[in-house]
Amino acid sequence: VGQAPAAGARSGEMAGTLVCDDVACAAPLLCVSTNKAGYVAVGGGGGSAKTGVKNSLVVFRIRAATTAATAADAPVAATSAKLDQVFELADVGDEPVVSIALHPEQPMLVFGAGCNMYLIHFGRVVG
Image 1 (cartoon, rainbow, N blue to C red):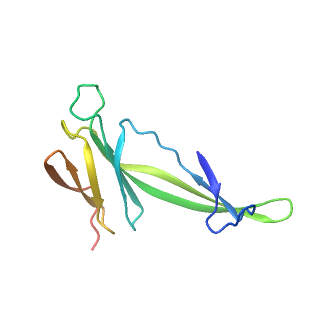
Image 2: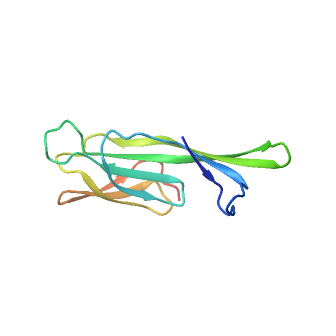
């Protein structure tokens, strides 16, 4: 878990704390995409070498919560972000995922692996 000063805090001033979820992936990451709906997609892999590292794609949803805590002389807000896995394509073949583009608002994406491009719907499409 990583911690950083909140956005907008000046040097030496802690307006709050941002606590980030630390997620370990099974393959080297080569690309990442985010969207307004709070999805994060990551892709990568070991390539065509037979190393046992699969070429994969994983989609997470960001879940955020803000809590207020009281310090000795001033209230301090803490914002936490968690990543919940919502979709995984554990083995996309012999080539790693090298590019991803999430739809700006819907649960769908396009990704490239080798000379191929794929369209994935990973949730309920709204609208």
